[in-house]
Structure formats: C-alpha cells, structure tokens
View (spheres, each protein chain N blue to C red):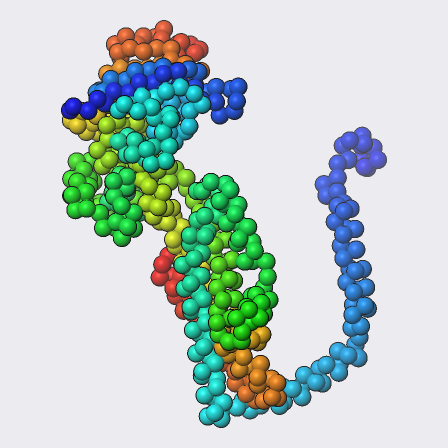
Length: 254
Length: 267
C-alpha cells in the first residue's frame, strides 16, 4: 500500500461549553496499520476524540493530519471527500432501519456515487458485487434484502462493519462497537473487525470499555482520563497501576 | 380524632381549588351570554328559522335528474376532481423539498426559518380566502381554485414533513453522513426512508381533503362543482342543489375509502 494511512493529532481541544474542555489538548500519532484501542471511563472524551476525526464533532482547536490534509480545517466538498476514506462503526449500529441490508451497505458508496444513482438505486454493478461479497464475508449472505430493523444486535453490527468496509477506507473508526452486545458476540465482532481490517491493511481506532477485549485485540492501548492521554503503550505494558490511574478508585479491580 | 386536633401542616389538601381556572370558566360563560344578547339571538328567530328550513328542504325533493342537469353535474364534478388531483400532485412535489428545507436538524437555521416563515404564510388563510384572492388575480375558473388548493396542500404537507424530519432518528443520519455522502444522497438514503411512510399517509389525507375543499373553492369562483352548486342556489333550483350535494357526499366517501386504502398500501 503506497498511500500513507497514518494519522497525527496535535493539540486537539474540544469545548462543548466554552471554558469546559472535554478534550484538553490531546496529541496522538497513530501508525498506518494495526488496531489502537482507546480506553477510559465514560464521559472522558473518547467518543468526542473519535468523532472529531471524521468531523461529526467540530473541534475547538488543534490539528488532525491525515493523507496530507488537516481534517480540522476542511469543509463542504473537501470534507465529504475526506470522510469517504474514513469508515465508522457505531455503538448502536446506526443502520437506516427502513432500508434493506444491501441498501445499508451501499450507503458506504454514497460518497462516490452520483445522487441520481442513489435515488434510483442504480448503483454501479461493481459496488453491488462488492456488497454481496462483503455480506458473505460477515456471514449475512442470506439477509441481503431483509429490512435492517429485522436483524439482531450482533447481525446489525456486522452490517455496520460491512458498510464501513464498503467505503474502502484508509482508516476505520469504531465507537464502542461491542458495548450493546453480549460477551460472546462482542468477541466475534472484535475478531471480525481485526481480521477484515487486517487483511486490507486498514488502521483501526476503537473506543472500548472492555479492557480485556482491548488487551486481546489491540496492538496499542491509549488510556484517557478527564480529557487527557494518561497511558500509551502496547497491551503488555498495561498494568494495574495504569488502570487505577485511568479509571480511578480501587475496589472495582478486585 | 377530628381534623381540628391535627397539627395544621398535617391537614394537607389533596385537590386544592384552582382559582384562576374557575374564574376563567365563569368569565367565559358570562361572555358567551353577553355575546348572544349582542347578536340578537332570540327564541322567536330560532323558531322562524326552523320554518324556513323546512320549506327549503321541502322544495329540494325530489332531487333533479333531468339530463341537462346531470350533464352540468358531470362536467362540474369532473372539473373538481381534476382540480383536487392536480393540486395534490403539485402540492406533494413542492411540499417535500420545502418541508425538508424547514427541518431545523437538517439545514442551516436561517434557511429553516425562512422556509418556516413561507409555510406559515401559506397556512395563514383558509383555502376559501386564498381562493378569493386567486379569483381576483387570475379570474374566475378552475385555475384559481387549483392554485388555492395548491397553497393549502403546501402549507399542510410541508409543515408535517418538517415535523416528521425533526422527529427522525439522528444516529441513522449521522452514519450516512460519516460515509462522505453528498447532501442529497444523505436525504435520499438517510432521511426519506424514515419519513416516507408518514409522508404518503399525509398525502393521501391531503387528496381526501382537497376533494372536499374543491367544492368549497368553487363557491367563491374557483370553478368545479362548487360553481355549479352556487349557480343552482342563485337560480332557486333547490332540487338540483340536492342532487349536487348527494353527489359531493358520494365522491367524498369514495375518496375517503381510496385514501385509507392508499395509506394501508404504503405502511
């Protein structure tokens, strides 16, 4: 892969209300491969950080450098073109419920397909073939024409992953992809993300509450607390003391 | 143990009297009585009115089925149906984009407020008033009635579209936005699937409503069966009036059944 898929965040700050930063000048460099897990307590800015990258949230200050552009400065068409190279998987799956599974997957091509094609559902046949291929890859080949609201949570998240991969992304963001799922399905979903992103050499940034899952699948763990990075290292380096620092308190570790 | 022996704070009132509401009710009753005396509503007039009404109804029977009258009825009714259907189609086509433009969670606020102001303007006057304005502007006939009903359809449908869009689930829209979709594709794949079923329901209702109102706008010069009805009144053809009224009732009922069927079809 000749495109540089690395991401550099410099002094990223976000204040929803002025004077109360959720992200306090976060700086982070993510290599162009492998999985980076961001752990930390709820309300610590993990989601905000990830959403600043594809600009579902507008940062207050700082730079987000990706493929030679500062994502924090983009707007209009340039932002849309940048977004289509960044796939996203959501905690609540965020499928369009009244669309069929295959239509949800094809949503991943909307950044490339002219409006009239989307309207008339005349997607290029290469895209449709890819959608069926990906659907098989996530194990939902038989559900192509089912409406998304008929699926179970695990199935929906598989569709969510396939939709993100349809974008042929250079970066995959996952915001708590397993938090609404049972433990077994959670592992399957993380495996699916790791495998499908790994074989395409797509770097993944994942917010995750489950420290064990983070240790098991991530190549690097970033611990956040109160809007700041307090730990950054390989999973083996993450010790009890770090967890105390990230989450605070003690009793819960017993 | 009687109430008197309890400490004061223990005697709590379960249903405290709502004095402002009581006063408002009494004031309303007094005003209604006063207004009735001003308007010279007396029992004698009421009784006399019943007498006139009875004579009027007596002159309606039997309903006229003369061939020339039926010819008039047919052409008037056909024009009304055309007015209603064209007004609904044009209204639906314009209301969808206008309603989307008025949704505050989808477009920049200044645009949303501008669209809302336009919708409010469309909704300000009853279709009959609008029809009178259009009759003055473009002259008597079907065109004026059609324009009036288009305005009425726009006001109703675009407001409901805007409200449906504002109630939709944003996470689904957010996910489509994250793919880098252009705005119109976002609307087509993220917004419309969520609001389309309701929009079709509204449109069916509007067709139903336009069928009824097309008779109304005719009364003030907007063409269609309303014009036929008005002429029949002026010529004291009360038997023909009854025929027209029965025909309108039949059409409205058929319209109601059809629109109900349409709503079920698209649920």
